[in-house]
Length: 391
Image (cartoon, rainbow, N blue to C red; front, side):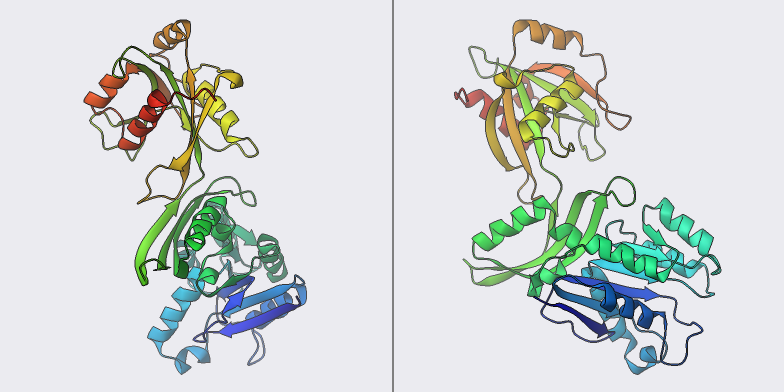
């Protein structure tokens, strides 16, 4: 496979497949000779440095005479499409312009996974622009060459995508949660007709930004029904590992369950808190069972030996809303451990400033009758208490 670069000017249709795509935009006028611009320099740098096997597509936003040669509404539609599907969006601001324009573009593409904003140090408002972008976690550069290097570094080797696949930007395409969802769809014989990125949410500093949440608006050809299901949104996040600490009693309703209470902004409950099993995600390189044990210590203060932990498998939590899974584990606790947990019910736990949890020791009957947990959590608890497996 050879290296190939295809430039797609504003208003032109893109090819059917590529391994990486870059969108180029920014200020229009500069001191270059007629017919030349920094855009031409950027494309030349990309062509020279794209040495990976595969195809790089470069979307070049319209400016100058190109704007008058094409219908404004057509350009707007093309611009939104190209910006939405590009793996990386480059914005270069070398010229005097209204300082509100770069900020408007920042707001339009405030995407820590894909956006790079740059301006030479001598450019008007450059310092303000770069500071503003940096404060929002967006990658910045002070040279056009540096911006191109940053883009190719983020692309790395890319990934071959065809037809509807190519509309999924690399940060989402590379995520484990997307690949599992997409493998399930293709395994069922379904086809991704089109996709539009709705949003992403990442954490960490610039250059180290794991993708936390993503949402795609998708059209899928459903093979079993011979139709296209259109305009649905697929949302996902990293999988979670959940631990059920319990004691079986003579009846199911009398069985003891350990919950944690935590304020979550999404809660629509009488007390404004979510009541759930200990669990979470976030430790790279840690297997799901160890993650469950770590979360239990953080959120309840109780350390459970790995040999006592029973694995019950993984399922989607809310299949009509999110593609992520919960991996469920369980451990039967002793009377002495229950007593310790009860004694700690008034003591907050949690990791860092963003997490504060409170232990709640209760019964399955109380949980069920008083609607304390959501349906997904109730199902996980029932699975644990009804399961008689020992491994």
